[in-house]
Image 1 (cartoon, rainbow, N blue to C red):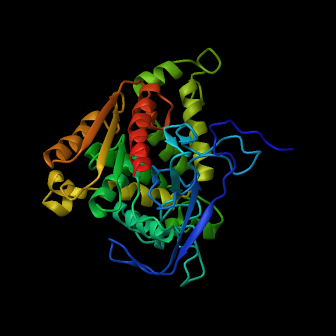
Image 2 (cartoon, rainbow, N blue to C red; image 1 turned 120 degrees about the horizontal axis):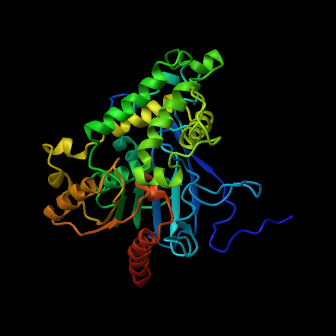
Image 3 (cartoon, rainbow, N blue to C red; image 1 turned 90 degrees about the horizontal axis):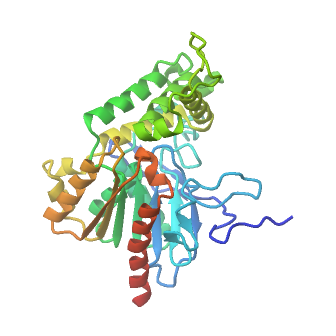
Length: 383
């Protein structure tokens, strides 16, 4: 039986792997002798390879951004609402590349991969990676795909940080950077949230110093708590009130510590699901990479000076109820870009959805993306 997909879906997609034998020198001064990146592509690369768009994922993201891996798959890729024919990232006009970052746990080389020196999983011995390292590995992937310059590099949250780093480290290799619900560096509060999440994993009795796979277990409770803490910060107070209020599961108090409120049930469900799908060592690595991100650090802590290197156009988007990466943080980026004399458009989208808004089909947000990327595509087709 042939499955019929919606007209604006990219349909069935196939993950691909690219292996690199060239050593990669990391910011932590260690060298990764070889590595593999898992990625997917949607759309068709044009004759001069000028219509390619890179999708950079957020903390728990991966390469499967759109479409379905098989006809039985119930949930499409994590940004399927935004990627496809006629959608803001229009695959009739763009060739879209989405990858799983180095250090990930969805096919790219990371802590769950085999260390060629030991024949065992890397586990806690996998080297620390940074946003700069990810961008460098992504540039190598672009080389392999024959893409000398991205039409746009796009990302939300941690993905937006990668887009910003791309504009600084490879100014001649992207025409546009879309930085969505991001920040120029984490606040102390955000680092604190990450540390609480890490401690929940590190202190889980089943963590075993990061060598849990050798013990045939994993830090389930630590991952559940980490996800619960993170998920609370991704939602706004208004969104949680509308979705859950103070509704009880059974309609009355039990005067105990089992699940009583619907929000408790929701958080536990999200945590449980996450604990079976995401590697703990990878979670530790990803949150540390977020903590370390600060492109101004190499430029006397002057973001304006760092962004003077950029040559691309920018779209910066924030959401009014996002308190994890508040609009003020996006405006820091915008103000630095203006001071550096760079071409930047800024949109602050009114919504009660919190940080997770960057993943959602919010009409004003999608109109902004569609208008900006539509102009990008028009310029390509005029050339």
